[in-house]
Length: 316
Image (cartoon, rainbow, N blue to C red):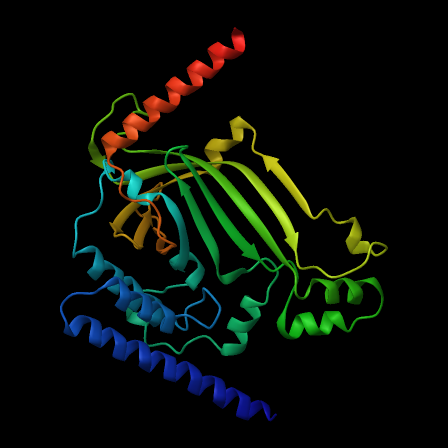
């Protein structure tokens, strides 16, 4: 196909996506209230297919503006009173850190990055696969596990070129084209008012403090037999961070909007002038969001009593 024709086709696709986003944004604000369903639709049209990359900086800014509108429709949750509403599995549908650079708003009129450049970024090794980030929250155990799916090898045009190379490089590339690396980033967490700072309060704030403690890796979908170089690569491994290093892998996120199936959170930057990542999640499945703060307290007390009784039986 003629390169000029392909370039014009890509440009028309980007322009059509941008126009769709503008029309959807106009529809959102015409009603005066942004709903989670409308924001989900806007995000879908503002990102490249099967990717977390925004079609343009202006598209990313429209998503950020719509998130701010939705946040203004309801007060944020308060921990630990509303903490059980977090429990369950959530799928990341938008991250400002993955959407691409966002220059100041006066530069929104600049052309979108070339489609070929965006495709190259998406096909780079260890680029997160679109829709492939999930967050599992276990409130009772105070664990948050981020499950991230990555491509372990270049895909797209570069992947095809490497696959055609002679020898072990070409063989490994062919075997890894359909493979994916699944990382489980296992964190402990504490929440405002849950007693981790020495004081318990029923409704203290909406910030959660995360500390990465273990990383688990699994290689899935790689083809190949038992006598090739790829067979020497472990299919699974894990690494526990030494306690002295864990403060370096910690962070804080404020939940600014929470409904039964939709959540917006913002990173709390270490410095006021630093950019704060915006994340949007949708709930996977039903989830348990009915327990209150007091019910959680009762459950924790009952669990502690069961553990004490079991320990006493073992000693006896």
